[in-house]
Each structure stands twice: as structure tokens, then as C-alpha cells.
Amino acid sequence: MPPTDTAPEAPTPEESEDAAAPAEGVSTEKKGARKEDGDGAAAALPHGDAPGIRFEKVVKRFGSNVVLRELDFAVEPGERVTLIGPSGSGKTTILRLLMTLEKLDDGVIWIGDDTLWHMDKGGRRVPANQKHLHEMRKQVGMVFQQFNLFPNMNVLRNLTEGPVRVLGASKDEAVERARGLLDMVGLADKENAHPSQLSGGQQQRVAIARALAMQPKVLLLDEVTSALDPELVVGVQDLLRDIARESDLTMLCVTHEMNFARDISNRVLMFDQGQIVEEGPPDRIFGEPAEQRTREFLQAVLAS
Ligand SMILES: Nc1ncnc2c1ncn2[C@@H]1O[C@H](COP(=O)(O)OP(=O)(O)OP(=O)(O)O)[C@@H](O)[C@H]1O
Ligand SMILES: [Mg+2]
Image 1: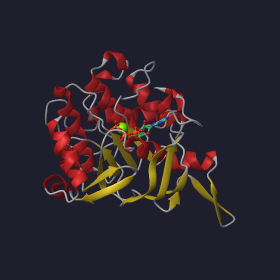
Image 2 (image 1 turned 90 degrees about the vertical axis):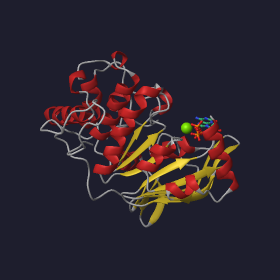
Image 3 (image 1 turned 120 degrees about the vertical axis):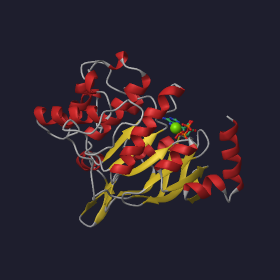
């Protein structure tokens, strides 16, 4: 895992929390990559208690570059939101703040009824300590554009390391859940392979399973198919569509793929220059964008 995708205060590859939770009934295979559900898909996707997310006047700077300017937005519990916007506008930064991979400069981020970067001390809101960050971070899983699997571990261990080290699961429990997830993502036969022995699409499916192994309530997806060869995109997108349909996870997804965004999300946020430009249902944003900035952006995406 590149150092920049590692939370400063915690997860080394051995302790990474980029992971997340399993799936009962994540549907049957459509493209021949995954198997029918069965006893193997033992783990159940979370249902019912996913928290919402709220950004309140969030500021993030890199030196003099102000990337988020008092950004306000919310994702409701169980809602699936896609974030679109130009390159360099700060979409990944939003996700990395939620993963605590970047530090907040100002404002407040809520996950459910708790603040992520702050905690209550004697009725005052103070910066969170490591324990608070650690507890909050457990709720959030992320899948990265570049997979970020642990290269020195086989597939099974990529999925069991976080649950054992971070969640305190027993090894047997973690292995059982991992095997259920690998079955779900159609890679039951690859548990002993190392990431370098897998295709990009397979690596990304392992990364999704690894995120779910940590049983998150919020799942963040950052352009998860943009590093894949075109023929591998469909399998990964189908898997994520199934997960979106079959789970109650709150999802925040960055993608330029409009059909995928339409299928996966309830709402699209157009983001630029540190602020939300407009938002609405995918059909409205993609079909009849109200703002000139959105129209220009969508034309540029379509032309690329
Ligand atoms: N670690 C960092 N140090 C300095 N600047 C950074 C860092 N990470 C991001 N930035 C800057 O913050 C801005 C937002 O970057 P970010 O990666 O969030 O954009 P993005 O919207 O995800 O872009 P893309 O669509 O290309 O992935 C950019 O100007 C980028 O150069
Ligand atoms: Mg990005």
C-alpha cells in the first residue's frame, strides 16, 4: 500500500482498516465471474443500522491550495450518493477525510450522531484522540482506484488481517467470513494467490471483499474501475451493483461512468471549486443539468 493511503496514526499494511463486510444473498452471477449464493457466502451484508454522513463547513487546505471551502453536504443513512466533478477538485480528498487519511482543517464531519474528527469532553467539542478516531474509522470502508492490496500477503490473508488485528475477530471466524466473501466475489479458488498473480479486475474484487470483511456501515468507492482494462470493468461494476442493491450500506461513490452512477446511486452531487454546484437524482443531473458548470463538465466527460 502506498504510504499516502495509510492513516498516519495507525494502519500499516498489517493493521490496515481499509476493509469492510460480507454478503448473504448478494445475487447470483450474471457474467460468469461469480458463483451462485450458497453456504459459502456465509457473511451477511449489514442491514438496517447504517449511519448517515454530514459535512458542516468543512475546510481542507494543502498549503495555500484551499481544496474544500466550508463544504456542506449530507448523505442520508443507507443512501447511495455519487460525487462527480473535474480532476483535482477534491473528490478523493473528501473520501480520504472520511477515512481519516487526511486531517481536517476546519468544520465538522458527522458519521451518524458522532463527530469523526472531534469528541465530547466535559460538554466541549475537542479534537478527537486516537481511540476515538480508531472507533469511528471502523465504521468506514474504502475501495481505492489502485486496489492497494497488501502485496506480501495472499488473498485470504488480505481479507483476514484487518478483522483479526483491528476488530479482534478470531482467526477461524475471520477465515470463514473471508471465504464467504471470496465466494461472493467469484474468487473462492484464489485464496492462496498473491495480488501480483491476479488480473486487475480480480484484484479489485479482492479489494472490495477486503473492504466488506471489516463490516463497515459506510462504503466509499473512489473511481474503482478507472484503472481496469475495459473488459474487466463490467464484472466489478456488476458486483458493486449487487452489493448496493442487497445491502443497506451508506455509499459515497466517485465515478465518471454515468451508467454505473445511474444504477448505483439515489443522488448525484456535482462538485467543483470546493463546493457542491448542484445535486439531484441521476436522471436529472445527467439528463437535464441546471448549472452551466455541470453541463460543461458532462460534455467534457462524454467527449473523453
Ligand atoms: N497530499 C497532498 N498534498 C498536496 N496537495 C494535495 C494532496 N492531495 C491532494 N492534493 C491536491 O488537492 C487537490 C484535490 O485533489 P483530489 O485528489 O482530491 O482531486 P480529485 O477531485 O480526486 O481529482 P481526480 O479526479 O483527478 O482524482 C488537487 O489540487 C491536489 O493536487
Ligand atoms: Mg481522485
